[in-house]
Image 1 (cartoon, rainbow, N blue to C red):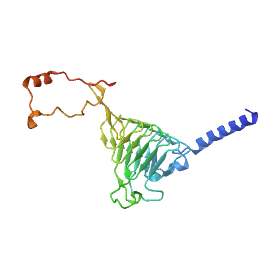
Image 2 (image 1 turned 90 degrees about the vertical axis):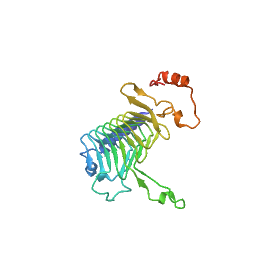
Image 3 (image 1 turned 60 degrees about the horizontal axis):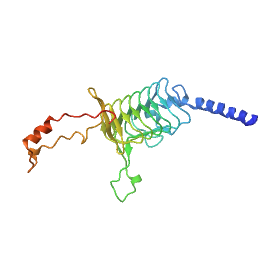
Image 4 (image 1 turned 135 degrees about the vertical axis):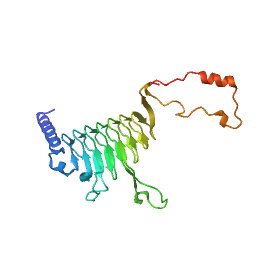
Length: 246
């Protein structure tokens, strides 16, 4: 590499480092004042994604928002969304680069929530009630979203409207999540389901085969018969719990 190329490379890298530092949004930068709240030590990395509706967005202390992350409240800039905040991100969070948080009614992200890159979280979805009208022209529906403190969302996870994820939970990369999930869940798949739960006595365990369904009550099934000795042997069998690695 020639001396000129090396010199130009050093200048470009120094210039880019300066641009990243100068372009980041912090509580003390002019862009930071537009937010409903941007906590102490919080930072939105440069280059920014699409950021609008800042007056309805709260970001907690020491939360780091990665490069090219889009955070929006409402359909577009310049719309009055009422007196309350819409997107709330707690303290100590880390939002991975390229992620999108799109709020229209209510998105609550707790404290110390970490995400991988390219995570998508929204509380609004299109409807298809009218089969003759283009779906994009039908009025969408909102449903609040909440993500419990201490949770981790893997790369490319999609959190759909109406989802409520409990504390200290894990969402696997690429999962498409909708519904309510209790604390200490591991959630994976398309559509997502619980693949691990934490039990104080057993630790992290997989769901038992067949879920929580009990053995059918043969007395309630017309024509079902079972010999007494067969029932006795069945009841005496030990219950086997799956280990976390199974």
